[in-house]
Length: 326
Image (cartoon, rainbow, N blue to C red):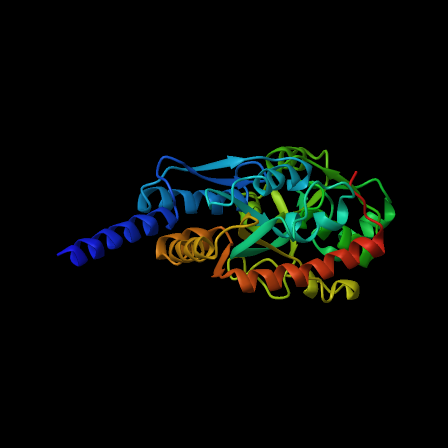
């Protein structure tokens, strides 16, 4: 009898310990998903899709917090200093993870050491869009116009170090044009100036730009992927513009889920699995697809390889062009 009681006691203690270890660890502590840009863009859309289903399915409060500024560094730093218990997560971007570490000299954290890759989320090409009054309807005409007005035309971005910013820098480098970069704290601040003509162009995420393209408020010149997007097949790629220097132009905005360094492997795997489950739901895939987002959830190893390869690419461009954070 004593042996049976001892066994049952150990079983109960094991179950309690297991429950304490299982993510999310405490229903009383909310899960926070930090988005490093203003509401409305692709990172925010992805965070809210996860939050909506996690809150319902995990019986845990899930809060999306927008922390824009410094090209995403402010929100990213916040996550690096959080407890590694899986209750503070980050929507990582190509900018915050593979561009900013080489662009900012006094960055207060190491994006490669202070963050844990959890899973790739989705990607979307950028699209070169113009204010509707700019007298150009294709890349060739735009380049001729920019060359006739060096440093008189400008392009907006949602922040220094974003893929939108680097798309513009790459475009200038390849086409030998001089176009002023006007950074904003986020897309919500950048778009009104683009629509109002205070800036003439932008490399917006296709996801975010589609409504304004469809309404005719912005002119789409070309997407930054090698192949046309299935979600916008009428928009040509910059590669097929007929401009030789843009033949292999390719920039993809991608988004990931990251956590503070030191997270338990069990938590990383559980969060990655829950993320994959949500992004695989037909209604979620359909919703993201309409916005031009290709969901492709993968685990931490695949994400780590992507971060390393893109880091090499963007660090090379930054070094060669001398781009600096302003």
